[in-house]
Length: 65
Image 1 (spheres, one colour):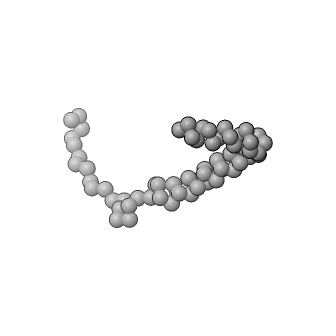
Image 2: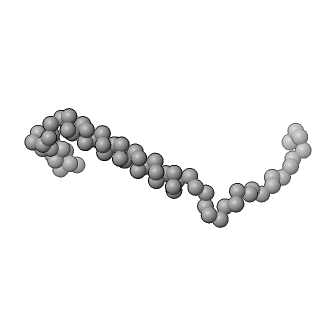
Image 3: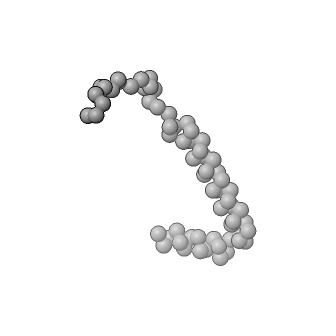
């Protein structure tokens, strides 16, 4: 973990200016959010292909039980 911290510290110290880092972070965040939204719409909520949506009937119970 300290290697990642050191790399980020070196980037901030010797790399581009702060506004450029903020814009790069914003672009990465927007790209990641867009990819996640697209992926979840395609794969996340779809029912299995063999699911017809039909459910077995429930057993009716007399009132009060």
